[in-house]
Amino acid sequence: MTSRVPASAVKGASVDARADSRAWLDALRAVGAEHDRAVARLHELLLRAARFEVSRRRAALSHVRGEELDDLAHQAAGDALVAVLAKLDDYRGASRFTTWAYKFALLEAGVRLRKRAWQEREVVLEPAAWPLVADARQGPADLAETDELMQAVRQAIDSCLTEHQREVLVAIALNGVPIDVLADRLNTTRGALYKTLHDARRKLRSDLATRGFTLDSI
Amino acid sequence: MDKPTDDTILERLLGPADPELLCDECFEKLDQYVDLELQGAAADEHVPGMRAHLRGCPACQEEYASLRALVEQGEQGARD
Image 1 (cartoon, each protein chain N blue to C red):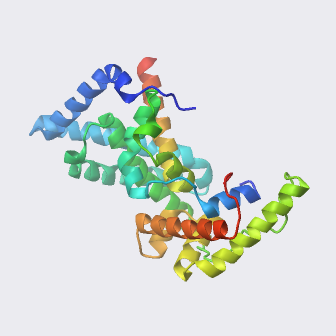
Image 2: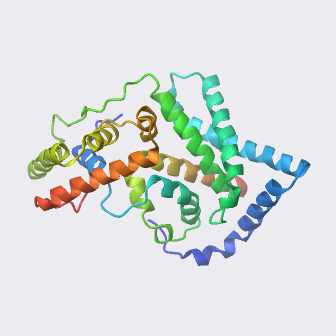
Image 3: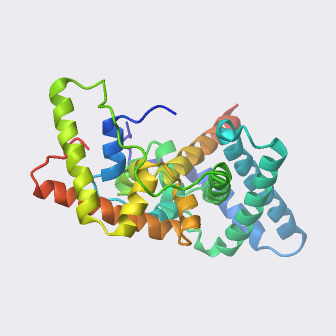
């Protein structure tokens, strides 16, 4: 459960974090040897984050050689370094500098690793995961209700969505295609695809509500 | 991978009911959200729409979980 402590109450504890973040910014904005040392430290930090991500996903990438994965971590750290340096003026101090920098490395590594995991897989845009057998964990009343709702969702997908919305929804929500893998295959961006997914979901919810379905628990 | 239940499939298809951020906004605020959470602050009040987006976007959820785990690990290391 999330604590209700307001942000202002924890500011006192973050004085060290602010000083540390200031030191990072000053060093990265310095010139000469101080700048070079800061960039090298930053690269080390980003490489650690990228390798952390590799280690979290190693099980799903057991068919990929360790050397290749480490190469992916290096590429991710390199691209993250470029992004962090280019966006340094966007850092507003809302988090520790290191937390802010980490997210770039985790994004770069995550995207690369998801793409690598799907490299030899076909991206299917047709439904492949509609449940053929109802979920045995539900009771008879729940089963009938879920069945009816599932049928209504299928109808709404067919009747309310555009072809593009249907393909994106099916690929991501039913077939489990990672959003950046799909973005790559459809030559678009993750942000644009999520907007499509979001709009499709709103349409489905609206259609189901119009037809009297209560979706409070979903 | 476990076979998804009907409820899981419905959740994936219908997404979160609450208003949510989109991926770009999520990335922009993810560091702030994680740090607030780890400080015990009211992250959901300060970054509305983040929790709903993380429920609806598997890729952002993965990045959130990794960032939180990485920062936690760093804090643990600093305490040890």
